[in-house]
Each structure stands twice: as structure tokens, then as C-alpha cells.
Image 1 (tube, rainbow, N blue to C red):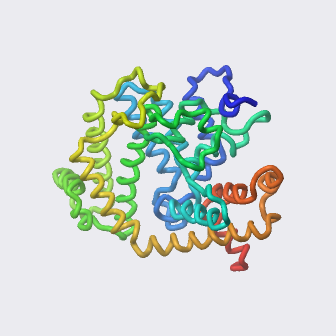
Image 2: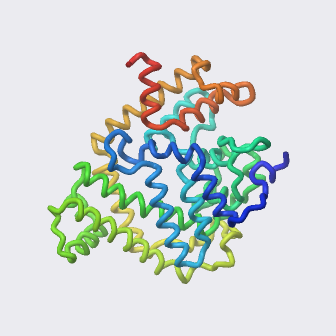
Image 3: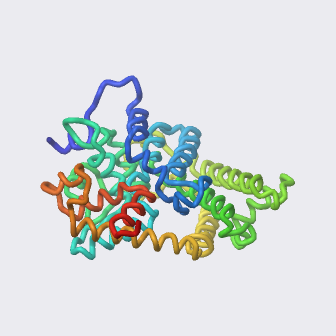
Length: 365
């Protein structure tokens, strides 16, 4: 198998190639598991809170709206958006960081990184064809998943990545749109979930100049803050609209559609998708506020600590007794390194399955 065959094989299909990519992602097992993977709140905290699945759908919707307005390829942006979190572990970023620590503590320099794991999910881990691994996605979709917005130069990347992808260039403009759509989505829905949970208030958010501007837009509609559900909904709507329209206004004259798929922008080139500098500063300050007030709230930190212990316990348990691995992963031990097989299995788990298996493994029934 040559390097080209490793990633994609052209089929006859009535869909355009990126619509086909999107459909293959949606029908994958890894995509379905996102329903039970943490965004900020653990899945069992309640039915209202976002998961990796709902987050991916929201990112996709925002990315499609932006690409449509800019004359870009909606299906490509959608395929990248729906794939961008497939490599996330249970328990959000804490789970990924913990798995990375476990692998490195085990003596392996190349740990775990969720961007590359998302790429590995669609290019090798998912099994949908007899003759080759992965979901058979196009090069542009794979590059967008791998790079997000920026050149992706990591020391742990295997040689075939260097051979297949130009790591000195940015990905497609659609991938850049997805990266900013991801930011817009998580800021807005984390505020919504945080306020709904009672861990953060709109009064807390008044420390942010951007949040104050959005709160004024809601107030101008005559909606009282005591009308909690409606107020939260209108706040999220105004915030998303404000950021999307601001991004479009800033980016529309910088986008050249002849470079949609060329990925020719080198690492020194300015990214054409973004916000004017003053708004970028406001966004950074709002994200800093959310980190302090919400992501570092003791309730969140406590739940994430429990998830961290589960990841450590699972990795240790499977390292000591590989026969506990499912047959699909156990069979791979003969041809792949033990630590990578274990990491792939743990990363594939949902929050609730990881906790359940950890409790079963250590006798906490």
C-alpha cells in the first residue's frame, strides 16, 4: 500500500466528495459516542447540558453559515466540524491530559494529543472497509482535522504524516472557519450551561466588556433577567450573532476563493478568518473570565478530578492485565505497542462507561 492509498480511495458516488465525508463521519461509531462524552459538565449531570455531540453539531451549524456567506465549500466545513472532536477522551481536556501523562510516565515520549487522535480515528482506528483502515475521507477533510487553523508541526508525528501533508502551510480556509466556529460555539454554550447550573451568573459576566455589550442587547428587548430561560436563550443568540457577523465583516475582503483547497498559505501568512483586533482582545478576556469563574469552579474541578483518577486507574489496570481488553483491541497487541492500544481503547470510551468500568475493575460495585 503506498502513501496515497493509506488515506483515501476514490469511489463513484452521487454526492460531492465532502458531503460523502460528512455522511461517513455521522454514521461512524466514534461520532455516536460523542453523545456521552463531556464538554464541561459530565453527561450524568443532567439532560440539558451540552456534550461533545451537541457541541459538534453547533460548530457545524455555525461553520456552514459562515462558509455559505463567504462563498466557500459548506460540505467541507461541515465534515471537518463534525470530525474535529472525535479524538477526545472521556472527561474533556482533563481526560486527554491525564492519558498523555500516563503514557509519558510509562516511558514513552510520544503521549496523547486529541487533535492527532481525531485524525487517527478517521484515518485508521475506525474499521469500515475490508481492504483498508479508516473512513475513506478526502485529503482536504483529513488536513482540516489534523491542522485546524495553523501549521501542525509536532515532534511525535510519524513519518507518513510528513510525507503526505505539507506541515509548513495552513489548511484550507474552511478549516480556519471551523476553528473559529468552534470558539464561538463553546463560549456561548458554556455560558448558557454555566448559568443554568448556577456555577456562574450574569453578574459575574459583567466583568467582561463583551458580555456587558451582549447583556445590553438582551435588556433592549425588554426581557427581565429573572426570566431565566428566555434571558439565557436571548443572550446566547445575541452573542453568536454578534461574533458571526463581526467575523464575516472582518474576513469577507480577505478571503480569496481560488485558495479554498490549495492550502498554500505558509506559516508566516496572516490567517484571513478572524476578528478585528479590539474584538479579539475582548474575546480573550471573556475566555479568561470563564476559566477563572466556571472551568475552575470547585464543582467542575471535583468532577474532573474523579475522571482523572478513572483514566489513571484504567490505564494501570490494562497495563497490568491486557486480557481485560476487548477482543478487537487485544488482537492488536501482536502488531502494535501496548501503550498505544490501551490509549486508543480508553480514548474511545464514553464518560459513563469509563466510570462504570473503573468501578468494576477496582471492586467499587
